[in-house]
Length: 303
Image (tube, rainbow, N blue to C red; front, side):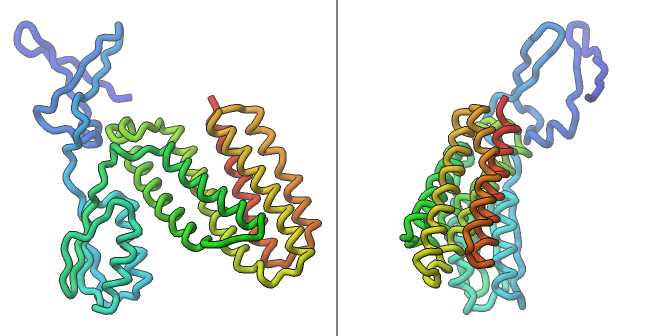
């Protein structure tokens, strides 16, 4: 809590200074209109405009002499930290197409200028059109389809769907970070701090499950029929656990969330009895653990 003293201004007005940190964090400038609501012993101050007056953030990435995977990491890092303009300079000509491929997989980023040794991309996405709840549902649907396809023994296009999940996850992280540091964006995106933190963990765990499904699918061709059937049973149970957990999140039902949490020992026992390879078990235990963490996040979020 910050204490401020009232200052008399002329004969009929009083002035109260605003904390500089609050003004800067909310992107306000001199002359910005504010609303003051009288709530008895409290005065609630808010700003009218939904337009951000914060300066456009830019990231200059020096790619000279760097390996492609390092450039990729720096580009994605700049995107996740809400940089609106990315300028990559000094890259090798042969790396231009892979770098542009990375940029195309970042939702909202469009290449606006390109020379032999420079690529400039700009964020054209209106953050106010992004909904955290919608992103979670889209990731949920995609990951659920990956689980079902592995369970049914027909894991096709999982690599492509994994790319789609990663694209949505990056956008979600970018949006949630913006919501946490900019209250104006938080209201537009539609997420309280609790919703953002819960969504952050759900998305993190769903991404892990998608990765596990992709790796399990790559190991399936080497399994005999008996092991395929045991894997099918495990994946079906995992899918039910996943579905119950997400349903409890959408409906905010504590009993359903608790039931999802209590299914973890059953899944762990199924894995112990499955007789699958060590490599498969590592991936499956990782997926089961991810669902357990999801259910616990839901339990914490229910009010």
